[in-house]
Image 1 (cartoon, rainbow, N blue to C red):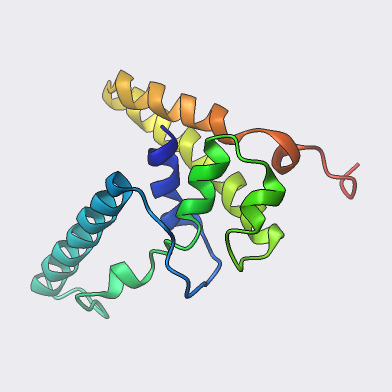
Image 2 (tube, rainbow, N blue to C red; image 1 turned 180 degrees about the horizontal axis):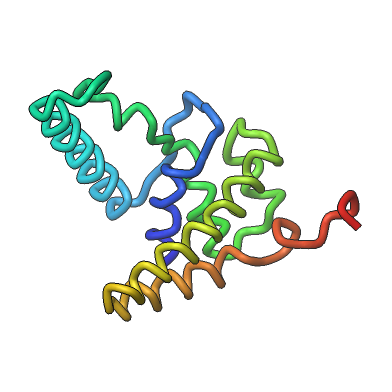
Amino acid sequence: PAEAVALLSCFVAQEKDDNEPNLTPGLEKAKEQLMNWCSSLAMMQQELRLPDITEDGAAKELRFSLVEVVLEWARGTPFDQICLMTNALEGGIVRCIMRLNETCREVREAAKLIGDKELADKMEEASHMIKRDIVFSASLYVQ
């Protein structure tokens, strides 16, 4: 679940960071497979003559800069330590993790609808792993 939620971060991260994250072999393989799927999808879209699609268009939208940060957060690393792993601002990290929690919920619900209990359970566990500490504490500004 920790690696799954870390990989999902490439869909929700908004921070641009030129630093390459230090990925585990499993995440590196998953990233490569995801990039291949993006390339295949873009070629299919070109064949169907959909507008403004380039072969690397979908892949450009993926941001892998916080994958390592999210992986360490899911593993229980304190927030101050994960902030040292990236040039991203703290607010960007918090937004990414909060969006990831919502994404986990959406994937869990979709998995339940299609009858994939294993994926639903994995997303439930991933959500519990990231929903902790200062990232999900009540805001002083909202109260």
